[in-house]
Image 1 (cartoon, helix red, strand yellow):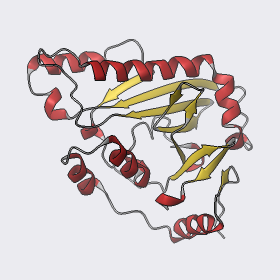
Image 2 (cartoon, rainbow, N blue to C red):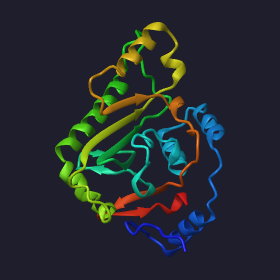
Image 3 (cartoon, rainbow, N blue to C red):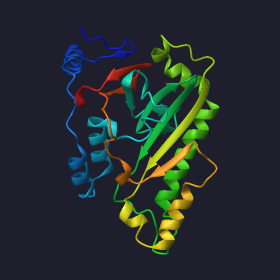
Image 4 (cartoon, one colour):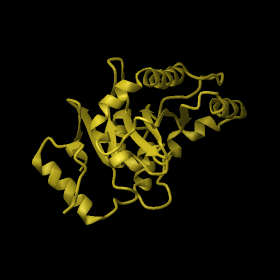
Length: 233
C-alpha cells in the first residue's frame, strides 16, 4: 500500500490511483535533458516552458537548497501571493529548524536580457523587480504563508523554525549573456547584490542534477488545499 501524504487532495478518484500506481512502481521518469534542450532551441513561449516543467519539475532551481528537497515532495504551480502576485512554481523546504519558501518565476526564453547598448532590457528589469516584490511580500506576510500551507504542517511544529524566502528568476539564454565582455560583466554583477533572497539564472542552468531524481508531485492551490494536477500524472 502506497501512502500519499494526507495534505494532498484530488479532483478525481482516478488521479489518486494514478499517483499511487506511479509511486508504487518506483520507476524514475526518463532523463528529459535532451528533450528540454530541443524545446529551448525552438524559442518556446512561456506557456510551453511552464507545461514542460510541470511534467519534469526536478529541473527547477532551488530544490536542494536545504538538502532534503521539497516538503512532502510537493511542488505548487501558479501559487497566489495575496491578490497582486502569482508565482509560476512554489515549494517549501525544511532542514535543521529552518523553513524556506521558494518561489520561481519563468519568462519566455526568447525575451532579450539586454538592449543594443548592453543595458538591461525593460522586460528583464521588470521581471527582477517582480521577484523582489515577491520576497518583500512574503517577508511582510509570513503568518499568512504559514496559514496557507497549514495542511503540510500537521506533522511538523514549525513555530520555532527560522523562516526564510528564496526567489528564482529564470530568464534568457547563456549565448546572449556571454556574447561580449560588457554583457557578461553586467550579468555577473546581478549576483553580487546584497539581496540574497533573489537569484537570477538563464535557462541553460536548468539541468538534471547528479543522483536520484525524486518523484515530485505537482499540485494546484485551491480552496485552502493542495490538489494533484491530474494532467501531469
